[in-house]
Length: 333
Image (tube, rainbow, N blue to C red):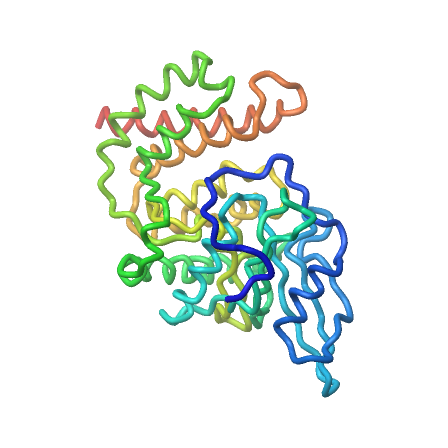
């Protein structure tokens, strides 16, 4: 990996605030991309993979001197240190047999955008994102099956990844640790009667969870998994790579079900129920994980009393109530 600027300086965790990446493909970015191709190559086109949501990552089409075309991915992330970590992790995953992107150029810092973070050029993998947004019943069923397969494949890499040096840089996110991170957040929710009541109740429960942590990309959004036919062909986005509880990632499909990008399809297709059945997990065992993720969603995204968040707030509070009810039934039985 080579960069056009120093990419080795350690950086703290967190996010650039404000995050200010370039809003157009400029000379520096073009130079970074073309550095991965033969002399005489030129950029023909670029477009966002998620138009209307986020400009980056960009799909860049490159014309080669022999007349052929190539496509690559220009990635920038608002998280401090995220691109550096992912660029170190991806070659490890490829060596372990996972179909992950290759690093073609970078990471490199843009000299005119210090609050953009480092930039990296990645290979584009074959396949399309798992069908999710406005998916048909058959498409949702296929996605549920392939998503479970793809996530299990990540979890199966736990021991091999732990033997790599990069493992020391991956967070250990137990359910108990996630709960404590919520209590430490600077959020008005932490001072509410709800949090003051629920958090002490959850602490001893999540403290007893001894499920071994597994390797994860921490984001099971189906857009992060590619497929062709009935086979998974690619795993994307390791910005949040960590070792975490093997079941808590599925709670995200419930607590984000009112967002865009199709998270609600997980509810309609019974994705979470499928996961629990496949892994012989009861609703009672899943309940503390769901409760923690409800608190996470509230303190991260939802105002305590704002009218604009009223619908989402009511939905998350109802999810939390159900999770706590499942816990009560478990304790009484």
